[in-house]
Length: 149
Image (cartoon, rainbow, N blue to C red):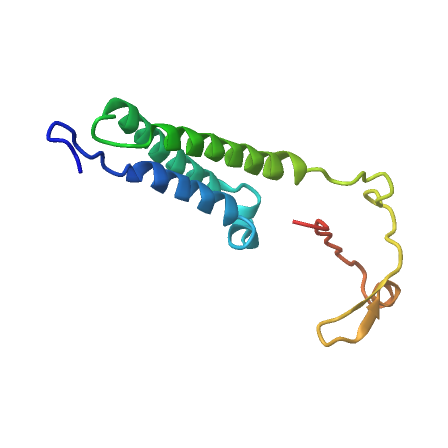
């Protein structure tokens, strides 16, 4: 039972909502946002989610320390804030540093150099070679995509 002069502190939902947005920002990149070029190349949607989560966490921590007699969350907010910063740092490292490490292009064909012959299936599944295409076409445009996203 509570004594007459003490009041029960309220649950600080801003802290938990902020950490939830941070988790969604960290976890949603690969299964959702990496599928689309607009959010894959620069993960702006995830960065906005991190920003919203950080803002909610900061507001919740401010409320926990500023109105400590009314709201709980001093220790929990600090722990979840550190975890959110760690998730943000890991996300940034993974997307802006680790994923940008491309293999050396020293063995790649240079501009103007003849491409090596290869065989690939066409839209119907029939194998087509580059040398066959050169016999019937004056020019051939080859487009190379990155090996991984």
